[in-house]
Length: 327
Length: 261
Image (cartoon, chains in turn yellow, purple):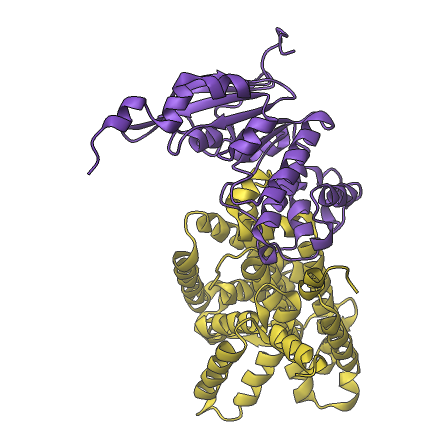
């Protein structure tokens, strides 16, 4: 019960709101219990959704926190997948090292793209990152000696010491663990001095500068971190997948992730997570009707943009408030 | 009072700013004494804001030198000003609109929040949160700490600009038209706050302002610009009586004789 009516009407939106935390807790409980009562296919979908959650967290850092467009996240994700798969094959170390290597390579590439982004913004930045994404897909498909080109690359099983992961069910606890870890990392970044400087730059570059924030460095770092998280998602993919093909790393994937982040609620971590799960499920369900997939997906997207433009979570929150106030 | 021989806290020498062929400010000399409130006034287009933006390093002068506390800052980047203890506000509000008032002011303390690794990763760095809360109290914003800046009324938004600038713990506070658009009650509160900052906190304040009620009441010294040059300087009483100032603001008597259409 806040003292000022104005304050109480508009306050309380920190990183995660109350209902969002409750929802996440419930989801987490279900997630942990999942393998006990489901089949392999459901577990496979769950693994994939968790990877998409992390990929969305990555995009959230650069778009949601820092306000910079990226249409290249399928490429960072792909770099993470290939780099961790190749590292896993090359050295005999536990799989997390391969994942870190994937995140590192993607992060370094992200820093370069971030430096490029200093020279442009908005639609120009969107186009430039789009071009980079297309170029990377071409690299994945044509750098035969490294990526095995259009035939795709076989990913050898992830190992944790003596334990070798051979099934989706086996991989699930690890995928869940790394997903929760990355949610924690993203929340920590968002709450830190660095996260505050990301948002300051998003809101007003001149004011950020007057507060002593290095705007250029902040924008490059946001891109690098965002790409590293996407690369980590790529490493997570290798936990349960045995094969990667360049076709799945194109513009469609970028658009899917962008949709998840925007529809979930731009600028909120809970929104990015919720968007990844809801739209991941929708796109998976629609796979059952491939001939109508695109049109149904597009229709749903238009409806969301019309009736819930500020994101799924804000929309649900508003409805709950309306019900509470008896309207 | 101000008879010390010490170098001025802020010293502007021969400041000239040209935009293409236009000279916005030509050869301005201005000294701001430590611990004073110094106002920069003049009719619209006199070059006040241009001068202000040069001192806060958002513009770079074509000629001249700006010295702050014995250090030449003429060519330093704007983002290094906060670290030197120079804070500024913005005429047209540059708030972090989607963030809360608390977060706006907390970001003002950016240069102080990274002293240790623990502070840098903390959402509520020790010592700094207390200072932010203290500043919110002094600027009358405590009740709005968790309100998004964009949801505040204009008067409170202007106060957030000042609170955020104060979070830098400035020694020199640059205010660009802080009273513009405020109601009388709000101007009175601003008047009190600025005097308190000078007396209790020892902050030197340079303000560009059109609201004469505020300028005449709080300024130790006033510099008057017209068409990019200094036409008068002195205390409120001296400036008010200066013929060139009267002419710049009211026009020469002969101009009243010019025929009208």
